[in-house]
Image (cartoon, rainbow, N blue to C red; front, top):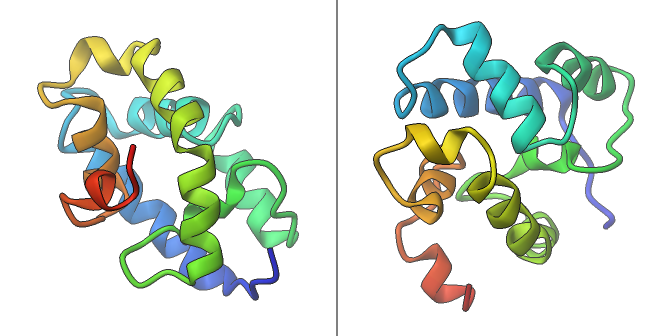
Amino acid sequence: MSVTFNNTKLLSNLKRQSLRLAKHLDMPQNQVQMLLAKHFYNEKSLADIKRKINSNKYSGMIFLAAVEPDADEDILNRFVEVLPQLLIELSSSPISQIIKVTTKQLITDVFSLKPSFFLDNDQ
């Protein structure tokens, strides 16, 4: 993936993702952030994600901070590649017991993607 990341934008996206996830979970923001870090990003905490972004270490799932409707095509393609893994992780996480929407809907909401994203990408 040959994408140039804007760390300020990634951090802003990360915050928005956390706020969007919070709309689906009735719990304190620090718990929401932990769930986002653990079950979306496979990291221990939001602070770990921020530290990696600030250190320009974009390995693993850190690229998810760049996922948004107008994201670079390479980012969206990588997102489509990890989508099955993300669906499995979220379906078996505590998040699935709390949300009142489908896992697919949750993903589209958290990343602010259009509702037809899954249809468009055959997932």
